[in-house]
Length: 297
Length: 303
Image (spheres, rainbow over the protein chains, first blue to last red):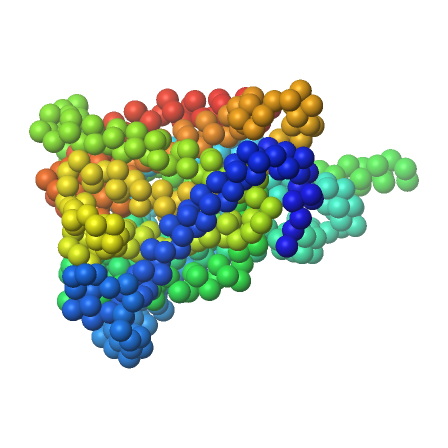
């Protein structure tokens, strides 16, 4: 248990907290936070628990809080009924490819803009960051681009490639990488160049080992972001063999699958568990990453 | 001998500059290609295509402002615009102050601080569609919904939620806020680390209290980031599409229809790509001043 006398910063410090009214304020704040935490956690737990109820239990008056029994066969049933593994596999494949595009392309771009700076790259930088917050005008033209790729005239819908292309040009990620690389002293690079190391060599031998933390952070965000993604996967992969978890959830919500609300709740639970585990493992990096990147959806 | 080595040195320097520029642009090539294809070209295509009649995806005939006229004179346009503004206003009322004050409170905690951080961020990891579904089920009209379950225990009759036209927008915003406010909390928390503690000390010596410190020291320090996140939120919510699509489909009777969703319907429900592009251009023109404002403020605050 931490001692109140250790609290030296913030609006209230240990001296203030000797007074009753400040203790009261502190108590109220703690109470509000506990309430808020419950609001954050309870909906997820409610869905997980309700999924195990029977129809009669769910709609009974008076409403019940807990199901009479937790029958884990229900999960197995729904898993095989929906062929859930197919959606799962597709999502994982989408994420793995996305990771490569995201980190390699955005990372290289950030690196070159920050440490190589070839002639004219300043212009590219201005363009990339200048269009970062452009309102999403481009749903239709972008869709048309994917249906009929300019120059090569290939229809890319139904493949993962468009979605990988989308994560391969995220201005925020480029900026994240660039800001990180700005922190690597130019001396390292200069002296390696003196020793005859090529640009690629410098990248692989010096930059890459140093940039492990940023790569980890970006990889985590990429995985979480793509697991959540709905609109573009739906437009590109909808009604193909490659539908992702989010598309499955959308089918459930629009009622096009023969599922009861209770089955739907079990499916929701199944889609929350993987990122939940992921979050348990990486919560520290995620917290650090959000404040590092400044802006992240 | 000396001249030769000088010559060599110059040559190798020129070589190095060439190789640096060449390999630099080579590494930028994939990025450049993708940004052109996926970000910049579509914007130009939209501005161009909005003035044409489209046959499928082929621009066939220049028709001037007709697409814009069609969009603006659509009987639902005004209502949709008002709905969208309502989304934005509700999100400013609910979604802006909540993470701000949560961050301030978490920052004050000496007990379980990281626990609060982790729980408030938890909803961020839930897939967007799953969030919509979870809340849709909590809002269920019958006795099964969580809200009505709670009402039952408080002793109130079950109510209508999403199917009540005057509640549907704020309810959608609540679900969205639940999902996304954890991110803002962490960002505010990071900004709170930058408050100069000696100012607090000085104010303590002057005998000013909690509220005065909050108002005169903390708030001025946080005004910048609050504004930036506020503008970002306006831009984001103005384009809200997925949440109404999944939770209500725009209903009941168009009460939750937003401009973004209309845009989506034009394109992928009715196949009117030209109208969709015109609406996209209109939304773009509405939002672009905010984008400029954001960059100006961002520059001012970071300098």
